[in-house]
Structure formats: structure tokens, C-alpha cells
Length: 88
Image (cartoon, rainbow, N blue to C red; front, top):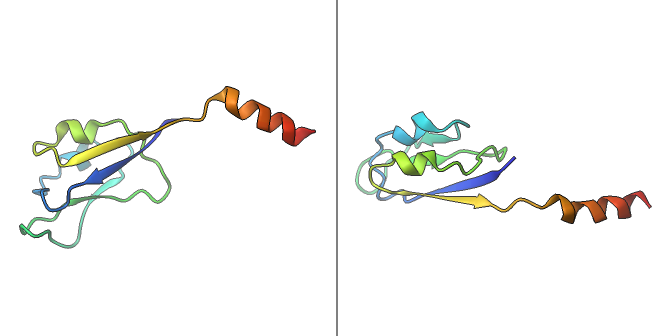
């Protein structure tokens, strides 16, 4: 499965919560504290690495404060020799 991460520009977030409603993995939450503008910003709460980097949160964000990074997957061809070497 693809893996990703989200970086939130906390000081620009207005706390509209749209990103939290569209996240299929439910890894975006609203902070308990306030940013410099007085809003509760969205935060990535993903200790188990469930984010897939789908970008739905970034697409729906009206202020473009979310940046999504998709982590590169390790190709099966690259994993196969290591597996064979361990078996030997």
C-alpha cells in the first residue's frame, strides 16, 4: 500500500475542518491549542503510518495550507534479492 505524510502550515490554517471530513484514513485531527491567528489548526495524527498520500485533504483545503508527500514504494524487484540472500 502507498504511504504518505501531510505537512500543515499551522499558522495559515483557519480550522475549517474540511480536511478532517474527507480523509479516508482519519489521520487528520483538530489541535487542542490555537495558532497565532486564533484558530484551531488541523494536525496530522498518524503514529501508525496509515496516511496513503491520497491528496484529498490538500484538494479540499480552501487556503492551500496542506502539502502532501507520497513516500516512494520499494520495488518488488529490489526486495527479491534481499529475500533470497536471507534464505541462503
